[in-house]
Figure 1 (spheres, rainbow, N blue to C red):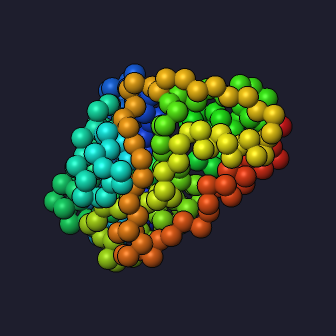
Figure 2 (figure 1 turned 60 degrees about the vertical axis):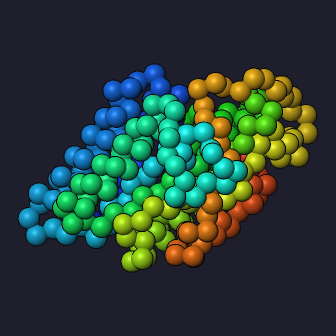
Length: 247
């Protein structure tokens, strides 16, 4: 397929979509984040007279592990504590090493808690929204659990900016909302839309690292990336989409 179409850019998003799944399937986690990455890069390097302009690898905020600061930058230490983050970080190293060896420009993007229309991966945001719409009780694991919820349309815009900016070659970017909210904050926004929802706060999931805000200043400066959606606007649009397409 790559030889047939010879794309100028490759956005590599292939991966198992959830940290919890990867923690149960170690081999698949590394096949999706490391083996698939090395295969694509090797294929690109072996096609005669084909010069890939940019390889964009999708990483994750999970590579930081437990956030050591309230706000993490791209220079913060990466110390993943579970399989998903470990596999994603290994994919980053694979991307840097093989792309450098084959002289392929690369860009690494670290998103966080992505949500929005057409997500069918059972992320926490999708579960919350669907339970609110269906009148089911919502379980919030961790009263103070914070995530940098990022709307998919903002992330997509960030991907395009990173791929088309020459100054983004061979760089790593946090591309997120840039302001963490608690899970309870997310549910409170849902409560404004669905006033009769029920929810219960429980203990946080022990396997998940403690996270927070990802600093966007590098992507602001180099890419001119600024999220367009507030969390309230994004949640409302997401809910409208699911209600409209429920059947």
